Image 1 (tube, helix red, strand yellow):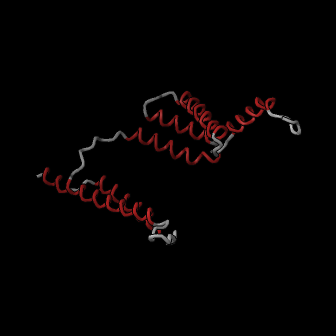
Image 2: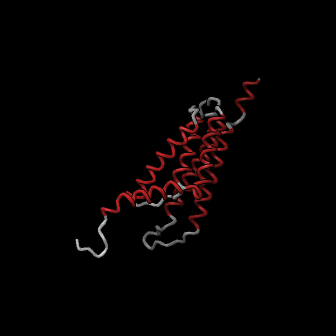
Image 3: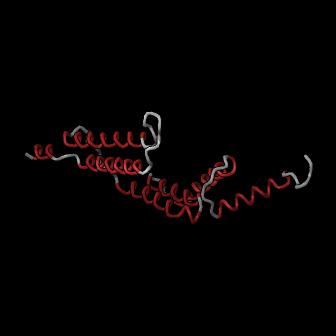
Length: 177
């Protein structure tokens, strides 16, 4: 009897995913409705693709609900919660700190917390490694690719050091080249 009772209950995780898909579909459709019709040729305008995506996500939500009630999803293993909490905490910390501490420190904290969640125990070493790697990535994006990433104290030091090193190679103002 317990097995029959279990078979009647839907897959609650799948229903939560379906609700998320439906909410995302509704959000995209609402946002698309604010874009305006536009498009004089064949009535294709800025709303067309977002509406198509919203319809597909809505269909996927319905399909997921049906699969949840039919038990079409494979049995999942039990999740180990502490690693997930370390990683999610790292993402939250990065989002909260990136504006104030800059890219390198915030992403270094994410790196260290993710490493801790995956079994690495030396937080100071992981934090130092993550900050150095993130600083290098920031430098590549900000100076080489000319993209904007949030800058904090380490990034400002990198900029000053780079400017100090490259100053002799820059042409003096007013000199003919």
